[in-house]
Amino acid sequence: MSDNNNVHISSYKEHFSTWAALILLTFMTVAVSVFGAELRTLSVATAMIIATVKATAVGYYFMHIKYDPKIYKWMMGTVLALFTFFMIMLTIDYLTR
Amino acid sequence: MTVDALPYTDFYKAKKGIWSWLFTLDHKRIALLYLYAIISFFLVGATLGILMRLELFQPGKDIIEPQTYNQIFTLHGVIMIFLFIIPSIPAIFGNFLLPLILGTDDVAFPKLNLLSFYLYVLGALFALSTLIFGDGPADTGWTFYAPYSVKTGTNVTMSVLAAFILGFSSILTGLNFIVTIHRLRTPGMGFNQMPLFSWALYATSWIQVLATPVIGITLLMIVAERVFGIGLFDPSIGGDPILYQHLFWIYSHPAVYIMALPAMGVVSEIIPTFAQRTIFGYKAIAYSSMAIAFIGYFVWGHHMFTSGMSGPAAIIFSILTFLVAIPTSIKVFNWLATLYKGSIVIDTPLLYALAFIFNFLIGGLTGLLLGALAADVHVHDTYFVVGHFHYVMFGGTGFAFFGALHYWFPKIWGRMYNKKVANTAFAIFLIGFNILYFPMLILGIMGMPRRYYDYLPEFTSLNQISTVGSWITVTGIILMLINLIVAARKGEKAPDNPWNGITLEWQTKSPPPLENFDKMPQIPEGGPYNFPNAYKHKH
Image (cartoon, each protein chain N blue to C red):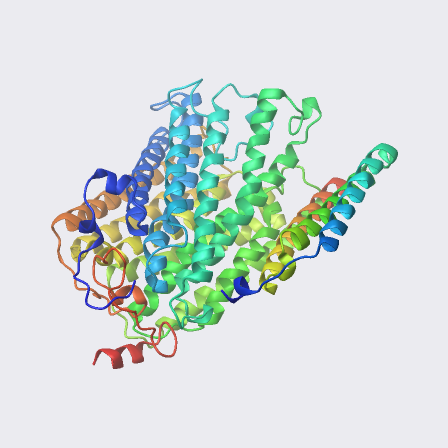
């Protein structure tokens, strides 16, 4: 339970920077879908990558994974890896079918 | 939790009245609620299975119409998978025993535990409601494959909603166990001092938490497709049915390990106790559970070799599938090595554990054949798959489930069953089981398709042998259950530790008190299965 005793107070700067980054990434998602519509598969992949970066930022800074023991980072990383593998295999199937 | 010299009142007598059961937060009582519900659904599922075997006794119509047959095999699958096998060992024995073997007083979230149970009941009611409402139970098979599940007029929506709700129950149980194992182990018990059953539950819980949400959303997509005609899976409106299969099996293959891993955990408990010997390769067995859980995520495509998935993807999945055999065989070799030069006591639980190994070996090896791309295309969707699956699930997990019931029976009820009757029932059950399912492997090789209502005359004799096997199997199961029910009510009082086990649950009274332990349990020196130390403690 020692991790619960670690006091961590995030700075306003960190919170604000994360928020600004999330807003920027949201604009990027919209921009890709509007201006990159002709890219088709690539625009979907870009949107997925941006969404993953946003989710990571939320988890890391807002949900304080940053301060948690390494095992939680490993757990999240494993889930992300499994999802990535699923998407890779799905893509292989679609592209070679 | 561990105040010395408390007066002993077992958890049955600690509180009284129906409400003390319906709103209980005690993990042991919740486990028993699960037990009674799950056994009931098992009997319903088995009855449906018997009806199918009776219909298949000879070609043509015997007792039911083709449409009824389709609905019966679907309901049989839904009940047996979602209401029996998946929750069986974790929800019953995991709930009852995890806090006991970890030396604590309850699971981490008792209220969440009760919520899990009621979600299970709600899901079960949804599944059974298809018998009454709409146009009858789904006729799609338990896999709900699109596009048929999108188009059929039967009550698919209620069936998939049942599976959706049952998924929540499964997730909450898994979450509860993960936190319990991380946070509530008795002082001094590290991960590598945990009994192997808790390792198996830990690996299983991760699958429940990570994989179940995928099937949840996939099943909702089926409902959305049926209601709104979105075009996700139905090719006639732009959907892709192969996508459904990808999404279904990315959950449902790991779910096979939700069913199998706890069974392996049970066997890992029974064998060292009845060999009175330290388990061989503790870490290998513990970590192989995690390895099976992990690798299990990478092999789902082997269910789709003939579905129209691309060749390169099929080759990759076939190679990956063989990797699962490695940690599985590590377990089997370690169990056998544990028995070697042990002081083996042939008692009912060990018989079930050995039957598990025998049946699971047949199930596992036939699984390798199905994982091999070149062989699978010949036997896919034949009775070979039905035989393989039942050898793994019923011959494996089913036997381990009943083995666990016999192993922990004296701990749960504080009474002992008639061992002669138990052994007789076991023998009938094992013989019947093999007569029931082995012919299916041959029928599959001969080319009989699965899920067919009718068949060619050359398949008749093997189908009849199989049906006779179902009667023998049921005889064994009924005898076993009667023996256990009689024992629970009138059996002679069992000692607290009838098998000389050394995991912590055997250090408390039978049945355990409400708070599990009256005094702090002692962790065996040198590991959870260090039997020589246990004898030193005793004498």
